[in-house]
Length: 135
Image (cartoon, rainbow, N blue to C red; front, top):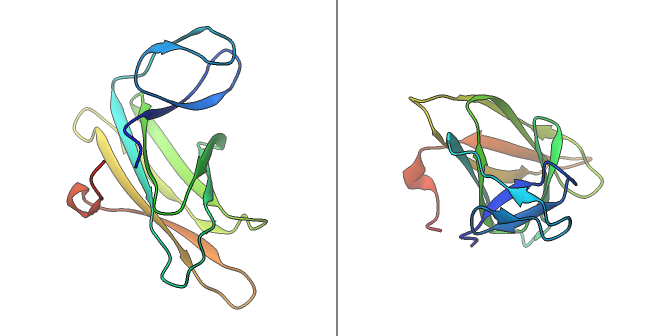
């Protein structure tokens, strides 16, 4: 489990897990983390042994990869967000949409695969914080 925060560099677009404010490892420009809210995502382990990770898209912006049984936190500003996750060649998925507001600053999401006949669907669902694994 990651204790770091996942952020995309506004200068070069590099996605990295960082412990806090600092400089981008790729372009050395300063990274300033938004402090309004946090989206925590957890890729549930698969009982069938399908250990493929998921690609993460936050408002259609690529945010890296989420490995099997991994949890990450993404700091965000207040606003409306859509989280989409993909696996392998499949872009099929059930997205989560929500608003980050001063009254609802912490968003918890779990993602898992719903098996299908021709392809598997990635399901992203919002859950209460007590259903998340510890970081």
